Length: 348
Image (cartoon, rainbow, N blue to C red; front, side, top):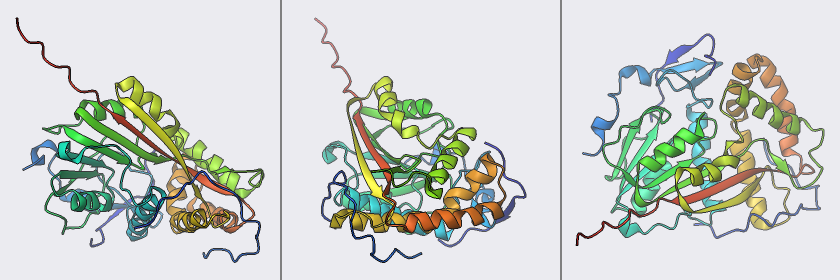
């Protein structure tokens, strides 16, 4: 990945919905509605030096300082708020569930949350499953200090060698698109670090946004989505990688693989009440940090200036508010199980 220019460092900041069928998307014919406003594994990871707490500053936003590469998303308060909002959006989408994997909690003792972000999923899981040990991993130390006793957070880059001393019964990977360049190696590491009978679940988004009709043709929003994908490909972090995950999991050895696609409308254009609600949340989750989603990709991958990006995004925001543009984010949930270990043959 290209290294950002003019980097500085800064100290970090302190640190039950009903089910919905997201496939039932029809546009609201009333386009006059008001638009939405703008002892565990301490030895398994390298010791955390104070340098990782001095975040990189790029175009006025802070980014992780761990390792030799910088994730495309910032890690400041704006992004932390967006991550927590996104967590709520997933629960709306999944009918209040934290995951879809058909796990037997009596057999799940160790859980790994990859890309834990603010740690909200790991803490919610740990609260609901006090019998489990939960480890959340991220490249940014933005997790809170006060957490459930069965939660531990670690700072690590999951594209490097994994050195956990014990395997996991459930690995949860959410919104890692843009953070992973080699999905084959990543999923193979997940498989190698899963106990027999354990599960992997990958919840992720696909860029560019899609449309239920021709309403997106020729819009700035359509162009923006295509540019986002182009930039990510140039940076070797394709934002449509999730489309190949199911096949990669099969090749890695997972069985009982299930893939479900959901839709997050980009505003409240759907006619269905629940999808309209999801659209309002998805709009906020996108527009509230549109600069964070875009700037690093465009400046690093397309050589735009930060000023050019900001001017351009005014048109993108307008399209995202336009109820006549029936756009949505494709969201995938892929689950798989590692086969049970073969029974040992008894000696005659």
